[in-house]
Image (cartoon, rainbow over all chains, first blue to last red; front, side, top):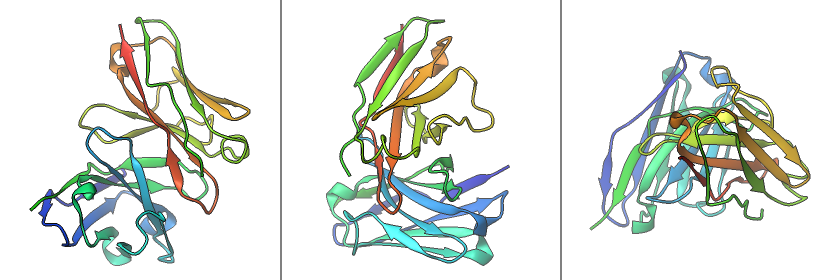
Length: 119
Length: 110
């Protein structure tokens, strides 16, 4: 079955960077987008960006442009999300999810990765 | 893109039907059929319930149905069950623009 498995909990100091991985299985990696979404405690989800796993094309939220980099390794069927210059407001659970191009539906989602930014 | 608004809470008794609204504008929900609905239980990842306004992914109960009228999309849950108690989020998408999540609705089964 289709699975997205994310890397584990991270604790970072302000100003540092974090890189979260999303290892996929059960489908053809290059046929889909990988979306990244984060959710701060008690808040609604926030869309961060996507990567088309085939071409590597990316699109980022204007709110995160300049700090966010999404990459992929097709041989490993894995996508990565790196967020730099972390601040306390970046504390959230970070999710990856698969999207079929043109569907605008994220399915399934990874289990989530808690990133805490604290000094 | 403008904010997408949902009621903060909706409740119903077991077996009843409830409807959650998702209000956008003529530029987003009114113009495109890129509306999705997600169910999220506490501490869990969201789960896709509806995509493309009306489509149900494989494995999602047919008690869940999506619709749209003008600038308002809706999710109807029929035959309400205890397991339906969760937060629900809609998303609206304009091609080549950011995805926008709705404000979220807490569904309570009385």
